[in-house]
Image 1 (cartoon, chains in turn cyan, purple):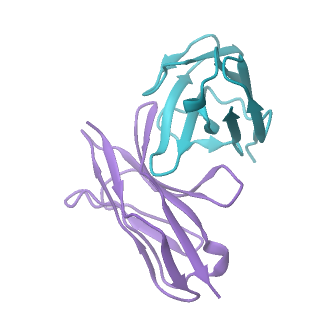
Image 2 (cartoon, each protein chain N blue to C red):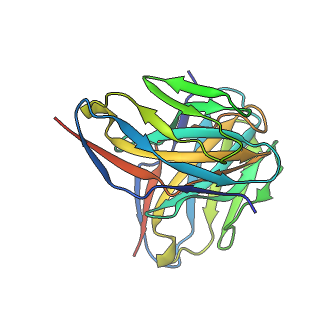
Length: 112
Length: 110
C-alpha cells in the first residue's frame, strides 16, 4: 500500500513565523502535490512537483514556497505565516500525470 | 475553464436508504473522473474512477457512470451503512491538475 505521511497532525504558530510542513511518500512516485482544504471550497492546489528540484505553481501559490530535494520528500514553506493561512493542508502523490492521487492524513494549521 | 459542481450537503439518510450525490463537470477534452472519500480525521482516498465516456467505476457498493452527453458523474449506492458517513468529493483530472468539487458531507443514521 502507498503510504503518504505528514510531519504533524496539528500545528499552532504565531503570525510572522516561518512554518515548514513536511510530506514523505514511500512508493517512488514522480509527482507530489500540496493542497489546502477549506469548508465549502473543496481542495485548492498550492504547488506541485513532477520531479526532484522541479516545481510548478498551482492555483493559490501566494504566500507559499516549496522544496523537493529528494524524490520522496516534498516540503511546503510559509515564509511569514498569516491568520488567513489557517487551514487544513493535504499532501498527495501520484505515479503518472493523470493518475490517482494518494493523500496523507493532513496537517491542521492554526495561525494566531 | 475546468470545474466541478456537486450537490451541497449535508445529506442525511437512514441506514439501508438509497444514495445519490450529483456531480457535473465542465472541461475541455476528455478528462478522467474520480470520486474520493474522506473519513473523519483522515486524508482523501480514492473511491472509484472512470477514464472514458460510458465507463462505470465501482467499489464497495458505490457506482458512478461517466456520462459525456450530460457531463455528469453521479455517485450512487443502493443501501448505505453508518460506516459510509464521510465527505465525498467529485474530481476531474486534466494532466497534472486535479480539480475538486466542494465536497458533500453524508450522515447515515442507524
